[in-house]
Amino acid sequence: MSELMKASYPVEAADYTSAGSASADIKRRLKKLGISGDVLRRVAVASYEVELNLVIHSLGGVLDLSVYPEYVQLVSTDRGPGIPDLSLAMREGWSTANDEARSLGFGAGMGLPNMKRNADGFDIQSTVGVGTTIQMKFNLT
Amino acid sequence: MSEQRYHSVRLDRDRCRGCTNCLKRCPTEAIRVRGGRAHILDNLCIDCGECIRVCDYHAKVAVTDDMDALKQFKYNIALPAPSLYGQFRNLPKVEYVLEALCHVGFDDVFPVARGADVVTRAIRERMRDPSLPRPVISSACPAVVRLIQVRFPDLLDHVIDIRQPMEVAASIARGEFCRKHGCLPEEVGCFFITPCPAKMTAIHNPLGQKKSELNGAISMMELYGQLLPHVEAMIANPDLVPSTRYGIAWASSNGEANAVCPLSSLSVDGIPNVIKVLEDVENEKLNDLEFLEGNACMGGCVGGPLTFENTYVAKSGIRKLVNSMPKVHPDVDVPASMMTKYPMKNDLPFQRNDAMRLDDNLVVAMQMMNRINEIVERLPGYDCGSCGSPTCATFAEDIVRGYASEMDCIHLMKNRLKVMAEEMVALAQNERR
Image (cartoon, rainbow over all chains, first blue to last red; front, side):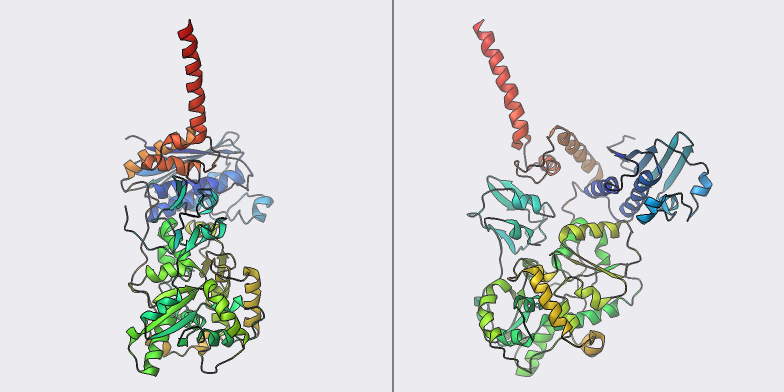
């Protein structure tokens, strides 16, 4: 199966001014490709959440979009700090967001659960001191 | 590609200088400059009139009807948009404006503010249906509905399926006139007094309806001078149809939201701001909101491109008028019998406009997007508009769609010429040896 369309977005830590621009571009591209309805909505929600997670919690990273004829894939790779307890992080309402993030209305602890709920495939790997990788798949057929 | 659609916004070719003012400001990137003249892309234009506002050469025009259009009918009714009241400074009573309209060629007048009263009640009743996706989005601004068709087609099921105030007002006006005077509906012309080209387009190319109840639209700008002396005569006819302060408040941004759903609504004006909020709705950031009012023009309809008075002066005038009137809500003021007597609901669903799609086939679309990305890499990224496309990215897309060539970029051309010149020098030196 050949990959057909790729785009890569570097996301900086604590860069609230451009937060949301990667997910906005992802949505714009998918619309141009004719992807619509439920899948577009789910990718839009999950890509926004994952981008904001990079801004709020990570030391910076990259969000990669790949579109295949059968599915859309989002991969977020960050440079740390890593999540010590993944099962706790996946729990609704749990958040380690700092005061700056909370003052902007983030940190409700719905990010990861929301991603998992919206993606057809969800995988998270994290090593403290190294970083976190989140892979999401959204079926087109 | 698509059938020719009616547009009120047009280009005056003789006045156009081929500059980049409108090109850069069009919210749907529907303008290209080719051969030294602007062209409006029919399938992307939403008739918002932004280009009319920014053109220094007055080359962008809104086509509306002139008063000669009244000659087609035995009787004519004027349906003034509530924003018309904002055009007259220190207006003590809206009745003076209504009466003035009866002196410039109309046989009767019916305020669209009354249509807004009826629509307010209709929307509130319709919103009791919990299955309508939230936030429910207003359908009053046709430019916003067309923006949703082009850029947010997945949100079309949020747009309320109740007719616009001018349509409901025209049904009532014609019905009541025929009943009173014993004439036939086809003998009565209904003309909207419009603040914007989008409404003119909505009459000739209706949204959600097979046919508009209106027969045309006359620009506020055109009528202002004729109306002024009659408004200043201050004649109030007690037989004219009244409206509530809520209906009149629809003239400005937040007027509709405040009438329909004061406790959980948001109103946003200006196309770039409307786009931002619609992005949030699409990202499910506003799921707890009941009602969303969007206006293409800053300030709401009082900011329309065909209005005469400064938007903010007009807005303040409307507020003064509204505050001088009793607080009677349309729920109480509009009789229940009215709700079934005239059509309130749209008879057609809003259609998606997929003009922004690269191709209907996903694989072909992805190949096109990859070619666009390759071209963008080679372009300078100045977004200067000299090629005739609004940005380098749009230019790349135009090339891939076959509407432009890479050599239309003056910066790439300059580099190419430099290389050619160097080659020629080298060639000449070679010859001499």
